[in-house]
Length: 278
Ligand code: C2E
Ligand code: MG
Ligand code: MG
Ligand code: MG
Image (tube, rainbow, N blue to C red; front, top):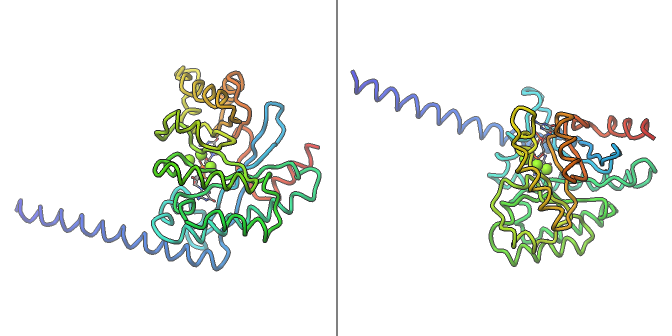
């Protein structure tokens, strides 16, 4: 009987694996369809300075699946990253965000906005990534000074010289570069110093640790100090409480992003908020 149970367990395990593989395939197929049927949308989350002024926004992809409803990018982006699909989605995001920057350039209440765009590892690794950027800039007519690419430490980890050269070419196009989720990777300080960055984004895990119960503030504080010493703009994400905001501000953080200041929202809602604050 023990043997039979063992067999059943293996059988059950196998079934679970099969189901998982099938679910993944179904989700990947659904993403292809979503691209064609334009079920993706970009939302924009405000980034405010110490005066409460909205200086920029982060573009965050949203997927409204006709049956599943809203699917989180935390779920589908990693899955897309396993295939070439991420390149198509990435191109779509760039095209959308750059076009938005161009549209916003015509109005006084939006022309200052810098749009931050998440770039995936596979996208950045494309040999022709810089040429693609140049092409999207040209085709949309967007001002590169209003566009910031969010890269993560993991995609900068290997092959140092090529990566720095690529970043320098992006800088030469006029684009800004931010290091997203900073503090979760393993970049050495000497390496960090060589990267042509404009902004350091303190990962939300460090912001979460800032609370009255648990005075684990040392990490957030030292990351901010590090960014400032490298003469980078420092932004914190995931700010949910006034205590977190006050602490980050006190440490010299310059830009703030989180539910406390504004959720990711559709273009129309953001424009409404910008216009009524004027
Ligand atoms: P990320 O780039 O680090 O984006 C920040 C995430 O934190 C977003 O989740 C945002 O909605 C969420 N967030 C903002 N403020 C708060 C807050 O106060 N509290 C909490 N708990 N969360 C907050 P989202 O939109 O679900 O995106 C998750 C991740 O998916 C992003 O992390 C990014 O890695 C990826 N992603 C999103 N859009 C894109 C995209 O267009 N392209 C690529 N390649 N990746 C994307
Ligand atoms: Mg980001
Ligand atoms: Mg982040
Ligand atoms: Mg993240």
